[in-house]
Image 1: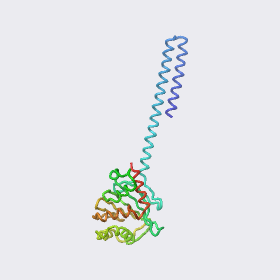
Image 2: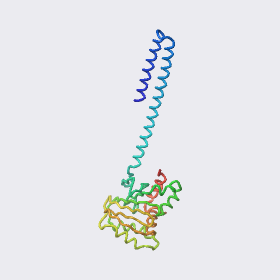
Image 3: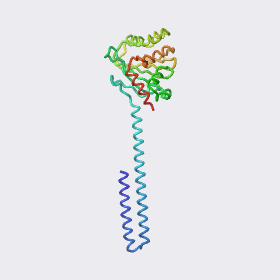
Image 4: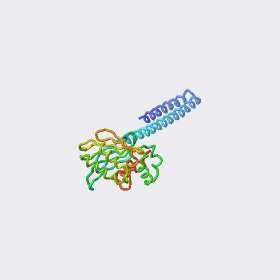
Length: 253
């Protein structure tokens, strides 16, 4: 619309200049005609410059708009494809990088799991190989939050038994009392579909928020390393989650 308006102005200016030239030929003489011709050239140049400026601003506006739309899209929740469970872009102050599903007995989709990391902490490894990123994920010194959302109802006892079954062999017989401590952080009763738990690992500390929203902490480097290996090691409880997390870290800006 802006460009069309400028073109219309240019046409009107040229028509006016032609009338001036016509009048100059009859009564104003050659000097006035030359002046009018220069005015036409000047007006044409100004109109072209204005059109170019408007075009530049238009493209600049489009570029800014595209960047804004992309930023909004980046903040939208991500849907875990097998369960449809959504993962927000941020959790516990950390940034989403990937999700997957925990499958039991080959077909039962028990829960969706997602990982959130500190982009600054992983900045040095995000451009490296999958093996190097996996190595970083196995190190509890890299902060991360593991967010679990139930896809079906399950008793808290069965839920904890499955997690302990995965963690205990990775602890090498050390700090096994932390497993009971972990169990006791959960309220009695059943987990229902949509129940949410988070485990935030920072060094030798794991902060746990249970399905009721209560928060507790476990202090054990052995426990934290075993938990990292459970989700990011050679035999993770959710291979799709681990794979997606590595891809997500590589895509961090």
